[in-house]
Image 1 (spheres, rainbow, N blue to C red):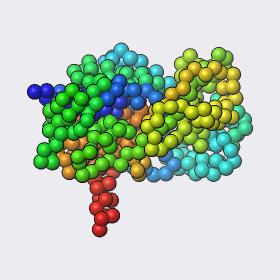
Image 2: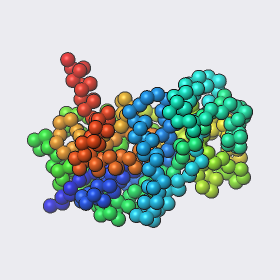
Image 3: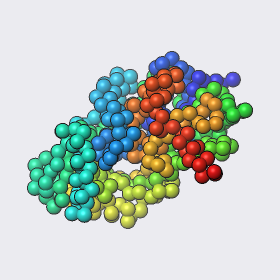
Image 4: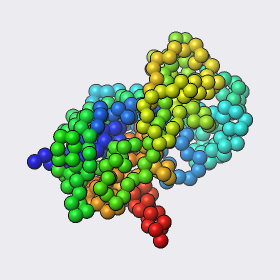
Length: 378
């Protein structure tokens, strides 16, 4: 009989982070992925936007800040455990108002963020190029977030995967979980394309595909797949060093060797992997308006990714409302890279019975959707 202490459906950066921490705590763990482990995660820009993402009070912000703070030590830990350098870059982020219409919202966000952290700075249009020399002077201002750094997403995904394998995790690639096996409202394992694997604890960390594993359950996590197109441009001369994120959602993330990752379009409800000319044209036009030097670059590649978004914008983390032994960990949307370190640590503590961690995760519990469902039926 093929049995594990914990089975994880989904081999992305979230699933592998959880698997790594659980294995380090002494549990036997298996990870199943329908494709290549980490494939969905490698499409990300790698931004650690723990401040950039928040404009008002949000239960996720404290966890995001905690996770961002973990990256320097995590870089060293994962390099020792896997031999992979995640390329943590500490140049900060500029949140930019490309037009006058964008400025009021950005000023409101600045007031919120600067009230919590004095290092958050407002830049008038003339000051923006002094912080990032490649930036256009034709903006309506920017917020400088010096602590919102970045990593290279494919390397982080690879590092967590390799560290998990080295810790004893069994990773089954190209082996989809067809369904969670449930008897008397208790999880017994999973059925894959190869057969049944047994466990008393299963974690659904399948990202945008999480909902497909609940065909026989009375509760489906409300996850919306959001397709995003991206493009890589390589520069030969001057290149920016700071991440640039526009109020309209366009971002430019500088990597090593003067590679600029530009993203991302947004198509809710789509798993389509095609890249459209209109989508790429829109990204290039918006990005070059902020960083004119991009017009001199060479297009290297284009790609798409699918992000898992919950209906209320918060991750779904915790026990399934009606199936004992089944946990859900999905809905991280565009913050999967940022939240991967803290998610792995919190899930390990949660599954090992830490009441304090359960309280921390309470705002993200799947039960919140069950409650809403019951209210609608009244």
